[in-house]
Image (cartoon, rainbow, N blue to C red; front, side, top):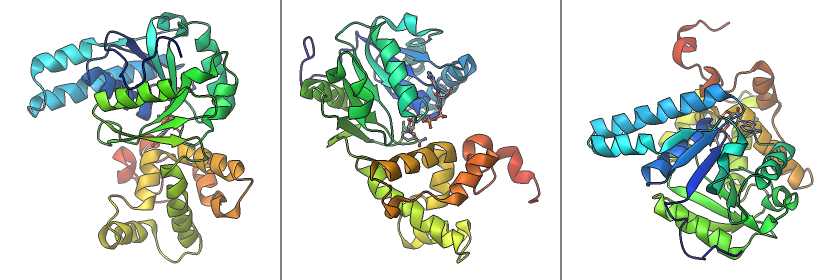
Length: 302
Ligand code: NAI
């Protein structure tokens, strides 16, 4: 793509726009701002942007308190974060990182709307966990400008980033996003657009098998988590990890991978997960999933 130099990170003089200010968008905005980039945050829920900017500011203050950055650096990083109240305010963006709901049609519409606003050399990156980058890009006037930039939760702590090329993605764009991830202190890997990419493909059976064990009432979530953590060497057990990811997000990813592999039974979604979503028990973010959090932790079991 003209104007994009392979093996060169986005210059810090170009603004990064982060769309979606939930768990992932806030984390992505934090690492970009910490690395010296000006960041605009947008969300259809204005209150999510306000909360994300306040939370990120709190994180920078905490890092300064621990001596991991100076107070001046924390202040400068905070000043690089700006809210956007409409997509039309993102015209100057050099890179848009999308972290909205895991739904192909919604992502396609967002990128189509953005394409009418930004310059032709603006790169589009989707943080999708599982949706085909080729499919998201197919709706674009310039599909070569889109790649996947898949971060892991919590973004500031997890080094791995999958850089995903769809069939139409420009290698120079993938190279630029790879080097930008490096400039943000991350450990990127290139991959092709295949359902679930690498990590979510491998992780699906981890969750699915644990859910089958639970369905058979062989053991409780806490027991299974403890076994995987203490004997298996995993940092988090499958149930606590699903609670961290959010059951709405994780269930959408499972459905997406299941359908992308032509309903291969290995990837069959779990009814337990479906019911948690139906109940609004989305995990940490709603105060209850397999476990209870915050105020809900003090409530008696029904
Ligand atoms: P979230 O639910 O915490 O945040 C999503 C945000 O997007 C919400 O604030 C929502 O208001 C906003 N939004 C929805 N539609 C929008 C639109 N059309 N325009 C602008 N904003 C919109 O979700 P989370 O967990 O941050 O996930 C976001 C994306 O990142 C999804 O594609 C998910 O698959 C992916 N992801 C999630 C991970 C996780 O562990 N939660 C890990 C890696 C990727």
